[in-house]
Image 1: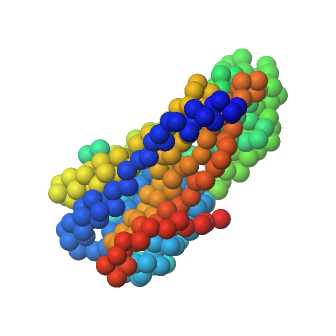
Image 2 (image 1 turned 45 degrees about the vertical axis):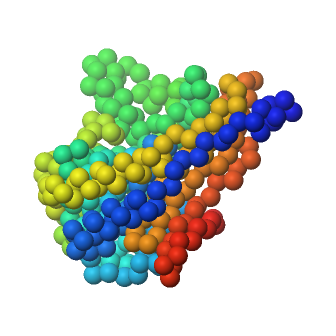
Length: 341
């Protein structure tokens, strides 16, 4: 940004999202009294997702609340990294003998994997899981001509293209992969195949934390990876039961309290973008939130974005994004920044 833009930036008040620790703790206390067990929250805003730093945040959280015979886990996420989901489940299961997953809304993709790590799943009428079939953005992926970004490619998409060729009576006249390689690099296709095998294995490993039947684990894993027409297909309670998972309808009062809690988190995770001009803005959005009794961890963006017109892409400047911790100790509320690498 030039000097004039810096002056404009100083004059504009940067938007700050609310941090509603007192309000969320009040609802969390009601839920724990209702459930008869500790409650842990994992919540993502629309720009948040399951990632490696969440693993360290879960460890920080359970170091505070300790080990329990049984814990309830409220999950609301559109997904993210599958390997991080496995590590998160590993931490949860190491600290708790029995886990109840509470799903009032979406628990998609790798968040579905987190739900699979629970002994039982309670779902509301708005709740759904999704398939966990693989997709990836590879460094050799094709470029989107609109925003000049790498395109995310799903393994299922590649399989369906080759199947259409095989089913076409004229398909044998061309080499399928020779044609496909004109648009998708062979290393990307190889990476997708490897990623698909990884998803199946991780799914089976997570289920094995509470299911001893290896064949049942295998069937559930393969169905979630191969049997659905889209990655975002909503797997509601009826179908979750048909998969062979221990799932039941969530009690109404619990459901309503979780939606109240979600409303507060939605306020915390609301858009906090401050525009300086059409090519520069500041991002202060809260992305991921973890919470339990007397402790709340949240990751907040704090960075500038500047658009490079010649390269048709955005770059990050002045990045001061960190994990924050609100913690009640000896009756006092302390706020600190948690450094996680």
